[in-house]
Length: 115
Image (cartoon, rainbow, N blue to C red; front, side):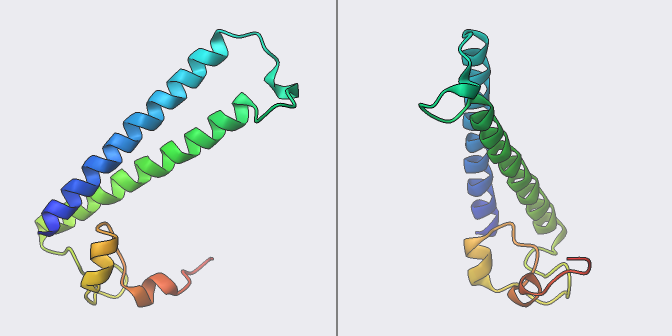
């Protein structure tokens, strides 16, 4: 059951990455085809701002995909569902909501050293 949830979440995340990458590429193409000075356009956000926003979303989606890959590796190793900080079980409800969760609620809520 957990493997199915991780696989489904991974597939959805991969689709999100493909969509965001396509949007970044389309924006780059749009920018290459225009000589419009969007930096001084009072009508809306700049292409640079939009590109930065999309690239941030893309980076986040790639990080999510990496987390799901780590979750799949933990599942294969038999350590999935255990907190990486304290070793206690992660609540099933947390894993249902966040299949890539690496920490239990208590550890997720505590501050890490240096933060």
